[in-house]
Amino acid sequence: MTPVFAHGSLRLYLLSLLAESPRHGYELIQALSDRFGGTYSPSAGTIYPRLAKLEEEGLVTKAAEGRKTVYAITDAGRAELAEREHELDAIEDEVTDSVRRLADEVRAGVNEAMRSLRADLASAARDASRGPRIDVRQEARDAGRDARQAANAAARDAEAALNEFRQQLRTDFRSQAARGDIPDGVVPQLKSELARVRASVLEALGRR
Image (cartoon, rainbow, N blue to C red):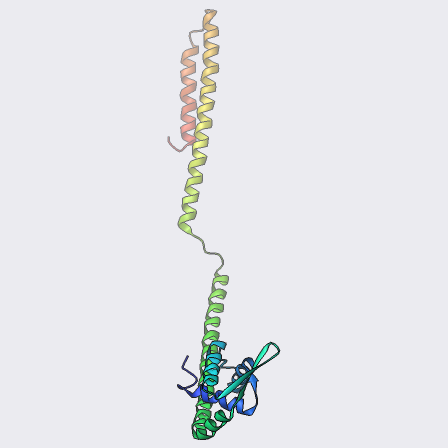
């Protein structure tokens, strides 16, 4: 932000405020804020060092009133103010220009903030109208992973079923062989049935 007061101008302006009436530091800050319509409010770090310098030069005095320190202009301060009255008129013009400039800066800042807000709202509205974004590639990867997991589970189940069938049939054949009673046509029938079952399964798998 552009400096509000030229070098040395704030010092003289503080004297003019104290010439109106004694004030404590906060009242001086408030008076300046009011003069600038709230667009500028000096900090305590700006005001108090200048008041201390004015006191050091004998242009103001300070006195404690309760917990507050009140500053008042001295005769020497009034004399300097009268001597530099033409400068004070120029400072008043500077203040008027500064108020106008600060108001323009504030207005520009507000306009820029409103433009940014409108852009953000428009972007949010577009995102809402499009709905949640879908990552097609991620969905494809997820679908492929799920399919592989299902196929692996089916393969395990098939292997378990085959192992159970083989174990049961082996037990049946060994028991029958122990009794010496396996008909001649059983083994060819077994091979034929196994070939038929395999062909049927391959057909279901699409691998004829």
